[in-house]
Length: 311
Image 1: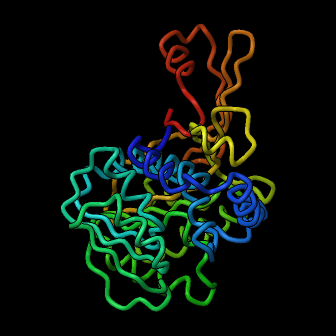
Image 2: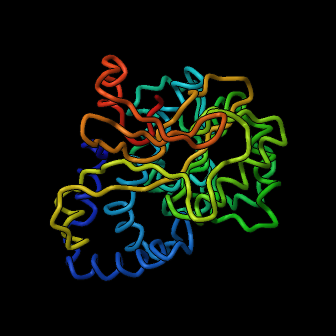
């Protein structure tokens, strides 16, 4: 997974003439906050830090959201309108375009004027950008899908439910939430899940049903997507590999029944001596399923199965 070529080229053009040492310094300043889980969408006070974000975090955000949007389309069908709470530079909108969504309208809500200015450079003129603090929102338009992409973790506890209620009221098909694949990100996902189920939401992914999450206090439900690193990305991070694995949590809650999968693979399948061991989340809880070579068709399918897929 990687950013569209024209976006990568645009970011490359923005950093021309900036010393690499300067980029590395600003990258290090905000990356510590992300690793420590201090915020799901880092507060970036300077223009330089925003540029570093585009080069080093935007690809991972794009990859995670694209993977979740693919799942969203499988569960609720076509989407024609999008409402983004905390849009950053428009990453989720770009993911929707990359997947070929035929959007007729999109409103992107973002508090940073700098991110709005950047996002307007690569989003169509018909996209509506609205500047403002999410907790001070009043009316928002109806939309098929509302998304919180690495932004819900920024919302103060006292404003959390009120904002979710506004988003739910505006949603015609589903709310999509993506957070870092950390215990803290998962906790926020669970809080949103419980509250939205109380409003009538139906979980369509990744969970197979609305039952309480069976994960224990020592585990958290998260997934992974492999992200290609550009040359600039590698230089800023002092990275040798041409890729990185982005861990993320997500939840999709629909207004209607949708079509959740009955069993989801929640860990990397284990291949051992003619058998494949799958850890599955089911309506009855977490179960380990052993598939042997004797089950020919099932075994062939299990060999193609990976973490995050339906089984």
